[in-house]
Image (cartoon, rainbow, N blue to C red):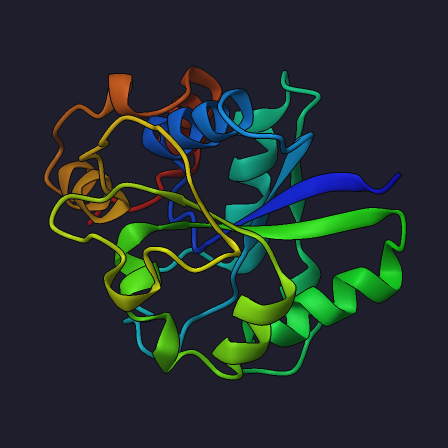
Length: 193
């Protein structure tokens, strides 16, 4: 029996309590056995200026999930050709970890536009996708797809950009981040002007 593993993709710039709450709730309210946080390298659609280097974002994720044996950090996309396409990451992981059944985790905002993804039909056909609600997005035409499972998770309105902007302007973000992540960001002076 393969281990059912959810892949939670993101730039995690930085990882915050919202990410951790969603991951925990998806694990608690689904048949997934573990969740891997897949840190994405620079997305060509996003501004590079405020993006921490890949190794720093990986370190922050590792710090944030260190005490949870059901969570794991993955840097798989750091070594794949750029831009990284989800289907290539899935195929690569399957060949490396044949004892795992990989599934995707995404917000309903991403499900609504999944038809813009490279080889999205292959993803929908061959992989289970666990979707958590995002305000204003109902999943569109893919709402009832046979490989889509809706997971009850709280609506979280914390964003990494809010955290970065707050730090840049000297405002406290202490309770938005896992304590060790908060300490590391302060120590390294990340996101400061």
